[in-house]
Length: 354
Image (cartoon, rainbow, N blue to C red; front, side, top):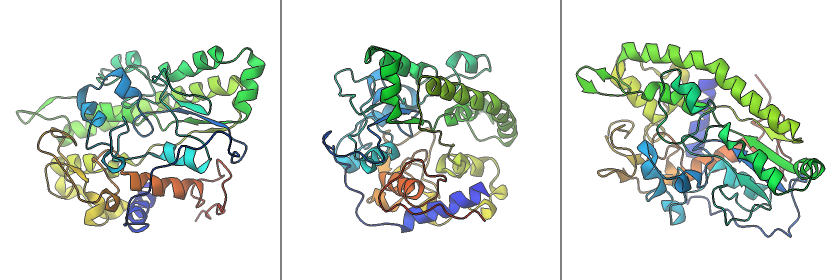
């Protein structure tokens, strides 16, 4: 059912606005009135919400192309965001009348109205815990536990626990999305299959990897729950813990599934949709999905579609700015997330559950 809903949402992404991409969120003056009494956002996560931390850590591995053009092409420059433009966290800040969140590792930034601790490639479990499971994380060591830089930040910018309580009472904490990479890294572990080096294509190995990924679920959930408790114990009163995307519907996974078992692909789960929904805007490889694990967006030989606003998928893994804008609208204004995490002007009531 969740995948079927995801498929319908992808169709909405395509049809809800195929014209000019959404304009850049404005940098709001701190003197302006707040929305829903929220004066700051503290965000944890991975590439879905990183606004420049990996860029400052140093880009490595398969994410090395995300810190340069064509990433950021819609807004005129790369910023470390894994998209052609802005992300859901940017649009949420805009909707709340707040400035865009600066990355924590930008030491010269203004953190008056919140901080972004998210790092692209980050995991819910520590790199040590994943290594004990035979999983290598090549992009960053900044797992969710490490992102609790938050505690150090709050202690260093306040004078007492009472002051922390007061600051958090008017803040929104976004704890994720995080955890998706824990599962991604299972499928991305390279092995020799069919006499060629291919991380995700062999059907037998896919079944083994799926079992391995499923075995991680309790630990990933517990890690997120533990982090949530730590932040709540510090005084947070408003927290959103987003779930993961239906990653099996992403062009990257659909490409892998086609390679391993083409006959098994049917649209029964509702995630294939029309051609534009299936095809990454930026990539290589052609075909239905325009995704090649060995030539990711930004690599030599890759191309970018003429209008990213007509595609939900940017690079086969992440969404376009247009996709993120529509998702933000659906979740926070159109009643898809229930109960509503924040109260916004012209917000519609929760959608009925069928």
